[in-house]
Image (cartoon, rainbow, N blue to C red; front, side, top):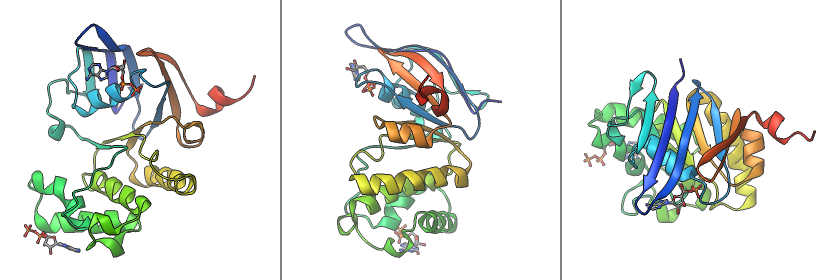
Length: 226
Ligand code: ADP
Ligand code: ADP
């Protein structure tokens, strides 16, 4: 069974803007889907609908076999990592990572366990007592990832998570995200502008244009010269 199913999804904004048109895609468990396409083609809107941050105008969204169109974001088995990974400046790394779990009334010892485990995976275990301002850009990005990982979601949504990092760090994080994907064994949906990220990280690439899916294929097929 597909872990995520998008059936005839449309997003219409006020003023006759159709941001997403007839989006159909079945995403298998553990896939690493890359969403690419020019600015304004509907990538973020698609992610935001999956996360529940944007209402779906038409169509059906299933997570597992559950229809989630009307399910609140916090009740979807999904976590999202943004490009502008705003951390809470007054909280420590630990508290930043724990925050979402606290909201969901996760028991304290379970929170501690999950935060420490995620911190180990992301190599930020030594930073748990620091405030965000005492971290480098790469470390902050790891904390943002950590905040999502601790939720142990079935689906991970990433909206250009590396675009604010310098080239060297981006290359390093690419490798680490790929490893993280394997290690967590969850479904990733990843929006990027970066062709290297698309080529090296994804199991399938979805190319969008003007709100439509233009092409869906493996990186090998999409980028190999004829
Ligand atoms: P991408 O992520 O591919 O750059 P978006 O999903 O952000 O594209 O935007 C798709 C289209 O929807 C664009 O034409 C954009 O201007 C429009 N759009 C996005 N958000 C809104 C909104 N809140 N209200 C009206 N139009 C919007
Ligand atoms: P509250 O705001 O409810 O008082 P705290 O912020 O004090 O909660 O911490 C919640 C839990 O997380 C506590 O059990 C605390 O021991 C643990 N904790 C806080 N910071 C760290 C840390 N840096 N490393 C490990 N555990 C921590």
